[in-house]
Amino acid sequence: MRKAIRAKEGAFSYRPVTQPFPKTGPVRERLDQLLTENEARPRRERLRLTRV
Image (cartoon, rainbow, N blue to C red; front, side):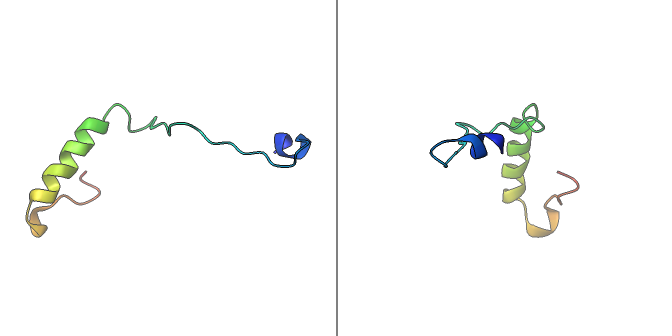
């Protein structure tokens, strides 16, 4: 907020290059695998959000 107020040109923008995934980072591959397998299952056998 301070940078936006102090900026002479009046416009301050912050655009990160990549969005980090700190909480899901270590298990990201396993989650992607579970979701891919889950899509192939019949509707009644799919994992719910609490199980994933």
